[in-house]
Amino acid sequence: MSKYIFVAGGVMSGIGKGVATAAIGKILKSKGFKVTAIKIDPYINVDAGTMNPIEHGEIFVTDDGTECDQDVGNYERFLDENLTTDNYITTGRVYQTVIDKERNLEYGGRCVEVVPDIPDEIIFRIKKTAKKTGADFVLIEIGGTVGEYQNLLFLEAARMMHLKKPKDVLFILISYLPIPEMIGEMKTKPTQNAVRLLNEAGIQPDIILGRARLPLDEPRKRKISIFCNLAKEDVISAPDIESIYEIPINFEKENLGNRILKKFGLRSRRKGNLKDWQRLVKTIKTVQKPVKIAIVGKYFESGKFTLMDSYISIIEAIKQASWFYKRKPEISWLSAEKYEKSPQSVKELKNYDGIIVPGGFGSRGVEGKIKAIEFCRKNKIPFLGLCLGMQLAVVEFARNVCGLKEANSTEFSSNCKYPVIDLMPEQRAILKEEKYGGTMRLGAYKCKIKPKTISFRAYRLALLRSPKGEVGCLETSERHRHRYELNNEFREVLERKGMIMAGINPERDLVEIIELKNHPFFIGTQFHPEYKSRPLRPHPLFREFIRTAIKH
View 1 (spheres, rainbow, N blue to C red):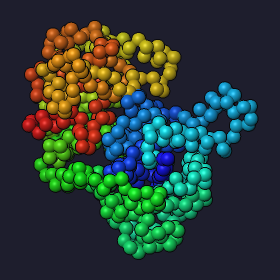
View 2 (view 1 turned 90 degrees about the vertical axis):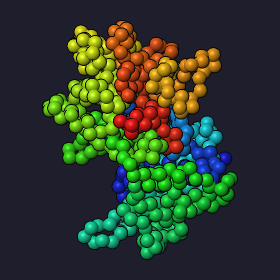
View 3 (view 1 turned 60 degrees about the horizontal axis):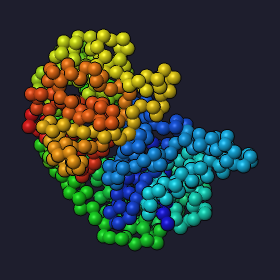
View 4 (view 1 turned 60 degrees about the vertical axis):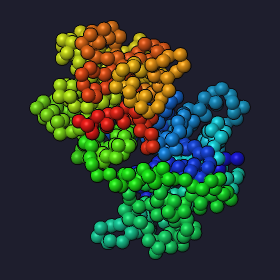
């Protein structure tokens, strides 16, 4: 029988509900339990695919092609498991399903109402995920904060589940405790108000995680305990830390895992073993030698602020590979648009050990990225192009090495003379009908990797096995999120001039990886390797990229 833990937020958003949920999952898994996690987004959007990454953060993609919230990426990284579409719920998905059922007379002709039919559909989805995964614990993170109108139906679903089986449902509130500079004292009143709002929804938190700049002291824990109606031991300190991977260690110092098990009347199936995680945290805290990586992009600028959430999986993949080699990652954000306005400024790339050009959509900053790629190619700077970054590397090579000066992607120039990057026929039909949501090439696809390439060496070192009967050939599976592909009509001319088609999708003969000859590391991937990188198992291509960057 699965146990359900609902995680809600108080006071304000952005305080780390996702990583806290993932950390709790990691702790319970270390104690011998099977764990899965669900993210609930209160948006009317059916999925995250059509959301602006500057406003919403990174769009994470699962193996089965679901475009979802970045917190699902955190769940995968902490649990070291691949999740599916069942692990992501939005208001849009729920309403769409209920309306479809009503149209199909699945409600027997009765009136369909917001309550209880919407909460019932939410509960059905949660229990379906529990059954499919066979999880002992299902963690459900409710996006946003308590008191928001959008959250009410999800909180109602949680209340209804608790009402039917109170011994199987637990509530955790993550709340922020500010320390106003002019006062200099940590304030508990906002958390008390958040608990009151949760009480109004018929829910009493069993555990409160106190997020703050500093650890919670005893007076603060005692005050929260008295005014929020729970034991002082159930008020857990969650101070700001240098790395999110330290969170499970901090929670276990406060005995959070055992507190949760005790409330469910359970015992640990094995002694909590976070030794590998502790070694990782020790590395993170002690590494000194830097490796300097620059990301040339456009989704991180919002006024005077830099929004790193747009590229969170890439950032974590860089960090994980750097720590693997006992290096301190120093990541810089460089604007592609700057290189369009001031081409000479591209020379600053010489100050870095490696350059990444990430994915993206639209023409803004594209020519600046191409200038950065050209500089990396000519100056032998380690380069990793991801999705659009790979496509622009092909455009740059076609223009400046193959002599196809008018080469481009039809995404930016629909009638260009040399469409080295172009739409697949089915994508052209989809766009003609203006169907944008969930219609790209999404999810995991096979990739055969050519022997005697840098990519082959990278994957082989990561101990990926060759399929039977194909000695000397590696096959892997990687996740995609794009519409445009390398145009096979230009493969011959590109290869003749020194571009290697290092990875091919065998089903459709599509290019997945490109490399350049006579370069220490110049690789572009049509897929997103960052989605599969894990803290204790960095992705092979990121590992090799960082290894070369260190040498460089």
